[in-house]
Length: 457
Image (cartoon, rainbow, N blue to C red):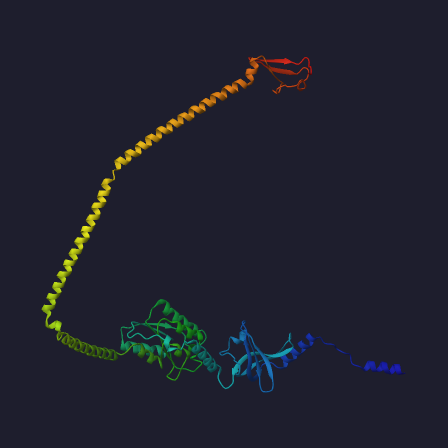
């Protein structure tokens, strides 16, 4: 009975399911992704870390908790500003689990700053960074030419700004050469066109001064002039740049970097060329200042002449002239004496050198050298003849010794030389066999015979 009760209890117990860590993490990731998608979360940024790949990693926290966040490169490229530690933001994204570490995190799709617009924050961040680099410094800004002959205008060809600038330039200086480079002044790709226009004028050297103009608008409309690429192109320009963007209350990054900032496009045109009346007024002021300086200079010089005329030298100029003439005569006399002394010294040196040259008889020296050469030649000839005679006598003695000791003299006394068929000299009977041919060399003539008999001694 007890066994039946135990079996019944085992049948009622639920079956155990054992999960692996990867399966559990994947299941949790799926649940979070399905339940927490497209949600908005606010908090403070900490541990902000941009990666070389372009991804942004940071932690979003409040007073009680924190969560990791990642914004991938494709989403980060659309941000107008960059997060920084301590910044309060609102992020939109979805929650999932980073399975290698088992941590849940927010995959961020968009970021908005709290209390301050994204464009305004991006404006402040870029302004702070470029100011730290020195792009706003007055020391690097170039002065405007007084009367430029060529003016470059970068603006939209359909806006009111281009009409205002052209109207003012024609009214003040009708003969000025104006080159308009049409660009878009708002929307996607407009910043690239503005940069291209600035580079064009600097490469071609077509203008003495550039006007960057646009009418008024919102911060979004003027954003092309807040792009970093535009700011750096203005800073790199070798031609002075005047910015006339928006209304008087509008400020852009381009205004801070430009060499001169005008409140409006019309004000930029008024700055680039002065009115004829202002120019004439400037000329008149310069003429008056020059005349005043000339009068002052003449007065100073006149006073100097009076002071010099009161001196003793000017009261007795004839005496001074006579003294200078006498001094000149003395200097001329001293110079003549010095020249004569130098000439006499040179003449004595020349005479002494000439005498030494004349005393040196080259013909006598040559004759002495010829006699020495003939004497040495005769001595060498005698020595050579004596040596040749001694060599010839030694050769005759050696020839007689060779003839006396040669084999032919032995053959004259009746001896003979026997050789086998191979020409080998026979010294023993063992060198030949019976029937072999033997050659016998006599004093006069040669015999060939056959061995009939051998006897050993």
